[in-house]
Figure (cartoon, rainbow, N blue to C red):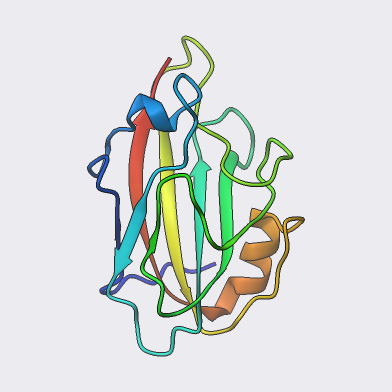
Length: 153
């Protein structure tokens, strides 16, 4: 998938770009999904998708903590721990948000919260994965933006 950068932005009211994710949103705390908001939707957006991915996980493709699909084009947020959209399967094999918790002594991990503006609607259910999303979205990504949070144990 190519990188398309424009006016689309993603943020969280609970942590700044490249800052520590508050404990309540990690496996060391309550494991709640953090609130996210985005703005600057590009023209032609028919759907959004959100992914939380840890590229620092010691696996060839990192580790996916969250996949959210089927977000309508007029949506601009996911509330804390109350995702109203289709949550798909993460790399834990569970549906929904898998809270970050790097292995002890493994150092700082970076968690990329991506929002993708798509020119197509993707029909998905909870069996959907990040790999499915990247395969289907491919050339249909109009823009993408990321928020990076960190965690260490």
